Length: 166
Image 1: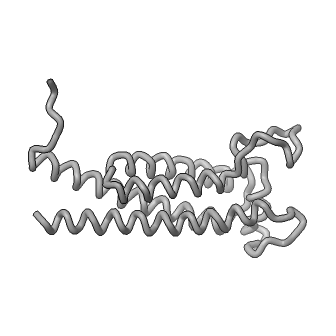
Image 2: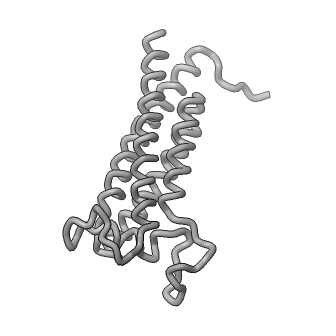
């Protein structure tokens, strides 16, 4: 039984470490978002891979800017800031042994990342390297969180720690 507990601890630490990598990746994307749009970002590799174009698009903030809004309009939060907060929450939930909530947070993060990837491919037709790294990180976190939740759910049911209805 201690092997299962050790494996779960390892999964939680791995989720937290990946979340830390996601925070770092999101900070890099936020740095590009805050740069002058006319300056060449460090990740403008080709015509297709241009994180400056992606991070200065109208979809780089939440809620997305309208077509008639100025680029410096107020009331919008950079998506990278939401990513930083999301990764911190996922890491904290994993370390606090809140496996189901960590899984749900990872599920929400994966959905958001997939939506942003769709916008990059079909609307902007440009790719952001930082966004692709974030997509990979959240996908792996989602898989690990799902495994961790599944294992913890089975373990608690076997040990009789499940909630009983009154």
